[in-house]
Length: 164
Image (tube, rainbow, N blue to C red; front, side, top):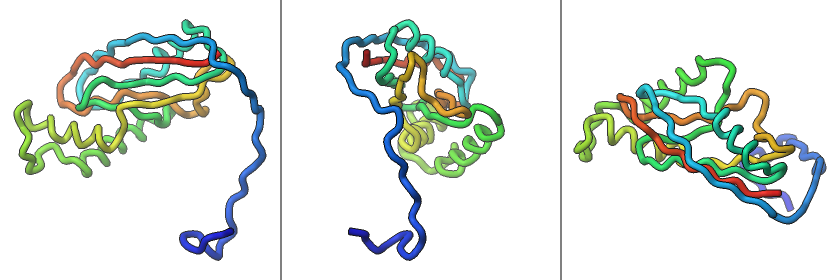
């Protein structure tokens, strides 16, 4: 049954058949931590570190979970080709959670509460498929740690992979 609503009356997109389907048991898992020292507010590409972890895990098919253990830094998957994208994303976050807003929480400085809001808007954890022993990211995708505080910090990332 088709429901009326958004998109009603327009041609719907087409969903293709499942491609390259496989199934099997989970026979392997691995975990590790990586520390990222940030230079301050902005994006740090951690794709290579996550890919190296996946390679070391020897998992050929499965999932890798990447988790940021902080409330004032976060993770995202974003375009890795044009750095202007990351600049524009920081500008957008500045508009959504301004540095000098009227916040009640300010014990750790004026950049702390906006950092918490920015983490709320982005994500503290990501899951990426692993295929043929490699991250199944798109051509222009990278995994980034986003530092939301003004000054650099040491950020701990927990990694866990499951699969076969």
